[in-house]
Length: 195
Image 1 (cartoon, rainbow, N blue to C red):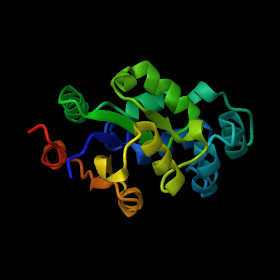
Image 2: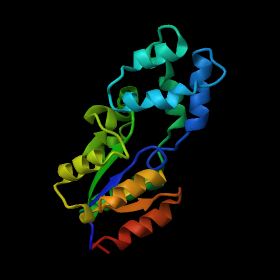
Image 3: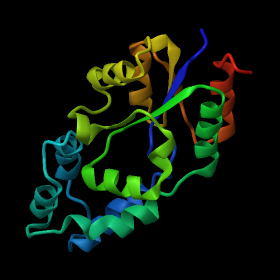
Image 4: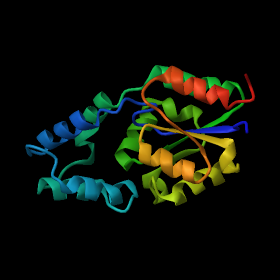
């Protein structure tokens, strides 16, 4: 079955994933030795757009925090991966539709738009804008609706095994990206009718 579209995750696929060092820097900026354990729990409603970022950080810091306080740190730790962005552009040139699906928050969406790499993707699905997040089945169904394609016509690339498994369970041609752009490229081109 040849694919007609590819849906890419962003962090760890199109951008470097500097999550551990980024979190440490966030903690230092708000005067804490480490990001509190409640961070992972609180980030879920944040990524669904149900919790304002200023409220999120103010609760963690115990004082008001500006939403832009961490912009430079995020940009430093989440850098474009040229080989993967080139792959996406190549697929588009071959006539394969390309989109993105990311668990993220509003300030990161704002920063990604300023970076410019999102311009070639359609749809651009950000969890905080649609009120759903991976691995919830609803967000994958939403992505398929945007493409107006059946699941078996869409490849999905993510570096998170649980998100790949969730996509695969719904019938998408899911690929676990392990950091090697050439391997992912070979997988995607083998699914394409444009070889």
